[in-house]
Amino acid sequence: MAAENGHGLAIPSWFADPGEGDVLAWVALALIVLALYGLVTLYAAFDRWAERQSHGTPLARTIPTMLLIALLYEIFPLGHFNILLPISAILIAMMADWSRFHLARGGVGTPVNDAAGTQADTHPTPSQRSRAAGDAGHV
Image: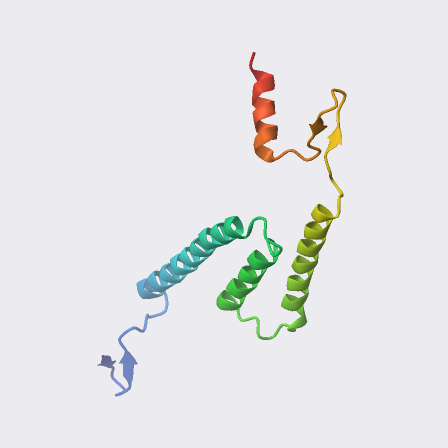
């Protein structure tokens, strides 16, 4: 494990002399980068799944925000940050969810009557918009 030199001191076997390349350090760095990339990729897939599952619930934005804060605490040492920082992010997401939930139930954005007397949707879904844009381009 250790090599003897002329002075009787043991040099570790993983020691790299000045001017030489350290392959083990590059391999370890590559493994750390790949592990971080894999962790972020798995988190992104889980976040997309959680966002689809929470769509239409009162906490549609709060749940992904809490997952992001948990990921940041897992990857980075955030112990030196004040606890009010993640709490404020969660409270902002909760207020956005609360306002969206109550505005949708409070009558704001209700359908209005168009010229033919039928109700038109004031906020079409993205699929309706893209379908209308696609139909407009084709005869």
